[in-house]
Length: 292
Image (cartoon, rainbow, N blue to C red; front, side, top):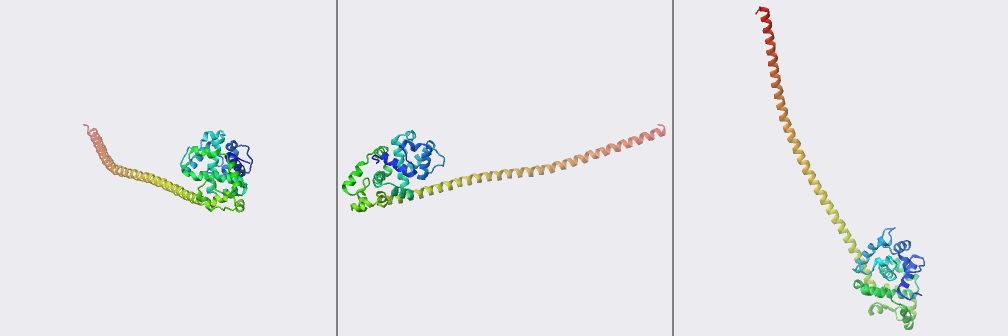
């Protein structure tokens, strides 16, 4: 039975992907990673590997916990057990909060002891929320959890909340028989803190969606303004071109008139020249006939 946090997380991952893993380093292997991310419904492309997906995962964690230094992704990519454990714990917690199918799977597939330990890990994360620090996360992710099972069996209250506030345990039954039948993860789901967390998650999704819609609208507005500027520039260019055409046509009329006048003057001079030549020829003929 898994006694440490990384052992519990390894059991959870094996249950989720339906494949027995030997160690957590296998999680960053391409095939296992892609399968796990598809089950956790991470916002990744279907063929994205760990190295390229680390930025997306880091941003998702930052949006949720308001920090981007909770996991050293460079060490995790090399299979560092602690960093992989921290990453898995955060991703499982986020998926458990958001996805009903994940809650149902873990609540039904894991045995009571594993659920109790996983519940403790989730409550530790829930208790800190956005105040979660890398140091605290490292302590939780490397914790020995055997004391939970032993303390639970000695007190007869396996459904007790170990990591949450004392007020959350008020809703849990103190009957040993009832506690043995109650799933620890279902108890967590029914706790006030979890209900509030789910509502907060829903509101965060709404805010994220509205921010995206606002960004899209702002982008459309900018595109419209650019198109409007292009339209006005084209209109101004067409106006200038129209003026040039009108001016050219006007000047062309003047040029044509000048050409006609010049043509007529030239024709008149030609006619005068031809008349002069004709008279000269006739006078020469008369002179020759008259013997001059």
